[in-house]
Amino acid sequence: MMVSKTTLVCAPLMAETVEQIMTDMYKAKVQGADLVEIRLDYIKNFQPRQDLETILKKKPLPVLIVYR
Image (cartoon, rainbow, N blue to C red; front, side, top):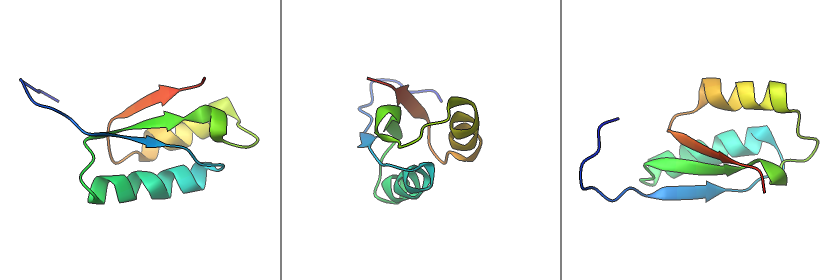
């Protein structure tokens, strides 16, 4: 993605399930987000290998992955 002197909108996503993260990501795209910040620390029973694979393969927007 080539961006030059442009402000991008990043939507933070915090949900308890990967399914909800995916739903929220599509909603963010429809509402005009350019990328999303995904807070992995909010996901209950987080399974890194499986959950990250799902998120990264099905993402409709660029993602910033965060675990605080």
